[in-house]
Image (cartoon, rainbow, N blue to C red; front, top):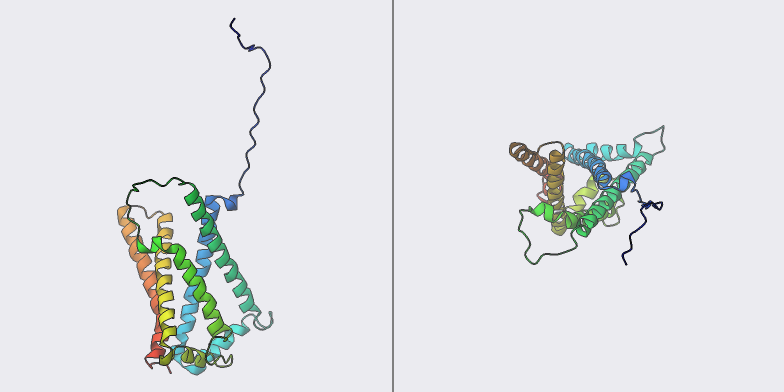
Amino acid sequence: MHWTPDRSAPSVDRVVITKTRSPIRSNVGLKAVMAVTGIILVLFLILHMLGNLKIFTGETSFDHYAHWLRDIGTPLLPTTWFLWIQRTVLTLAVLGHIGAATMLAMRARAARPVKYAHRRKIHVNYAARTMRWGGVIILLFVIYHILDLTTGHLNPQGDPSNPYGNVVADFAPERWYVTLFYTLALVTLGFHLRHGAFSAFRSLGQQTPKGERRARIAALVFAVALVGGYLLVPFAVITGLVA
C-alpha cells in the first residue's frame, strides 16, 4: 500500500524570525566607530605634541601655555571645565576604540573556529600582528602619563604651578628609566599609528600597487614625524638642552 501526501491540504508557511543587529554593532558600524574615534585621538596627539614643543620657547612661555589650557572657554565656562570636557571626550574615544577593536577581533576569531594543521603562511607586518598588545601598552602608558604629568602623583616635583619644572624633573638624567619607558611606549604608538593610517588610506581607495606604496610611505612618514616630535622633549631634557 503506497501513501501519497494530500497536496490539496492547506500549507503552513514557516515563519522565520531573525534578530536584526543594530547598525552601530554591525561590522561596518564598528569599523566606523574605530575610524571616528581614531581621528579624534590622532587630532589630539597632534595638538598635544605641538603644545609640548613649546617647552623650547622657554620656561615662562611654556608655563603660560600650560595655565592657558586651564582657562580655555572662560568666562563662558568655569576654569578647567574645558579640560574636563576634553578628558571626557578622549576617554569615551579610547573606550569606543578599544571596544570596537575587541568586538571585531572576537568576531573574526569566531568566523574561523577550526584551526588547520597546516596554516597557509601570509605576510603580516609587525604592526598588524601587535595591534592588540600595542593598544594595551599604550593604554597603560596613558594612565602612567596622567598620574605623572597631569595629577603629579608620580612626578618627583609634582608642582601644578610649575609645569616646566615638572617636565624637567621627570626626564632628568638620573631618571633614565622614565625616558626609556616613554620611548618604548611612543615607538609602540608609532607602529600602531602606522598601521592605522595605512588602513585608513586603503579604505579611501588606495588599493592599487602604486597606491599602496604611496599609502605605506605616507603612513610611515606621519608616524615617524609624530613620534619624533614627542621624543624631542625627553631627549632634550636628558641631554641638558632643556634644563
